[in-house]
Image (cartoon, rainbow, N blue to C red; front, side, top):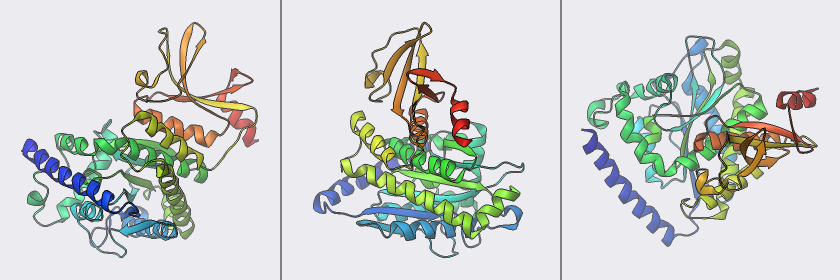
Length: 373
């Protein structure tokens, strides 16, 4: 069944890819199309933690994001919904595909039976933990509210991990771009709004899988947490959240000005990341240099891109008998955080930020504490 399902997806993808390339050739000044998706709606309220409605909050945030993006030149915003109506998951993706969209952003609020709190941003991928799978399963289960869902979704079962495997293959081409946007979103929310960081993650969301462009799903926080639920239900919280999501999308769009082609060359990808980072809000620490430590090893590796998953400008230093490999070099803590998130999703999950002063490594928490004081 899954082989047949994947073959159908591959055929659709090939047709869309051909039509996208043909469209770009005919109309080289095609606007950058962003599809904004407010989760749930209509009889599907989403979660109702503390009596709040996820469907209302996600819509309010999306409308504010869209209002800001609509002011940008050559950017077109399309909404999967602008009112409290029910839209099927497959139709949300179809809206983006029909529009030949360049970006798909889905906004949600989280829930848990504990006092959990914080923001997390997802890209499509095989769940790396049971917790990620549970979040994806919860959002995917909306298909049960649709008529004839078995036929519409080709046997996809939200409760079955094996249903996610074919999904991941379809979005693989856009994964790095999705990770970049997710990194920008997550770091804006954490650094500028001081929300708890639940990180960028990969999980199997149907609404991300069926789109043929870079796509992210943002869980803005937990309505089931008394404090965070009240924040997200407030006009202030929704405006602040929308501003940070909108600014992340603006940074991402700005980074694309270097090329109109698909990102396949690691060096082009690296330039895009660096350009996106340039647009993030600054948090400078005078006299401090931040780097991301990728690895420490007794092996002496040539720090060229093909040895480090395509990462450019990796530096090698020998410390305490080990060779240590670093990515990035900046006095801006916000920028190094974006770099860290990006390389973690590129394949270095244990990467972390280190600080140097006058060429010597110093304690990072003390550096951060000194500025706070």
